[in-house]
Image (cartoon, rainbow, N blue to C red; front, side):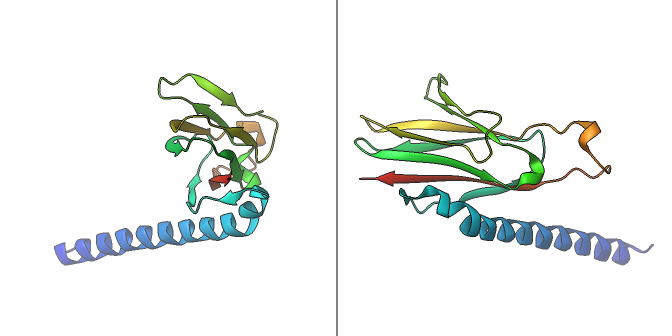
Amino acid sequence: MTLFNKIAVTTVLILASVVLTVDANAQCKRYTKKYCLPSLSPYMHNGQLTSAVLNPGDSADIAMTFNAGKEYRVLICNQEQIGNVQFKVLDKSRKVLYKSDPEQHNPSWDFKVENTQQFIIQLTVPKMEKSNQKTNLVPNGCVALLVGFKE
C-alpha cells in the first residue's frame, strides 16, 4: 500500500468515527428531550442537557452548583439496555449526601439547599454479567442527568 493510500484510509476511518460519535450524541439528546424531560415535572428544567452514551461499567462525576433557597430535583434517566444507572450526590469533601436505590429505574432525589453549594453528582452504569449477554457485543445507552428547580 502506498503512503497516499495509507493516509487516505486513515483519514476516512477518523472521519467515520467522528461522524458516528456525533450521530450517537445527537440521538442521545433526542432521547433525553423526548423521554426524560417530562419526568422532571412539576420542576422547571434548568436548561442544561447533560447526557452521554455510556457502556456497562462506566462512571462519571459531574460538578454542579445549587443556589440557596431553591428546591431541586436531580433525575437520572437512561435507556434500559444498560441496566439501572445509580447516582450519588457528594459534597466538596466527597461525603455522600444521597445514594439512589440500585433497583430503581430512572432514580431521582428532591431536596432544598439553604446555602449556595457545589455538589458532585456521581453516575455509575452497572457492569454487565457475562451470563446476561446474548452476544459478545457490549451494549451502550444514553444516560442523562437532569436538574429541575422550584422557586
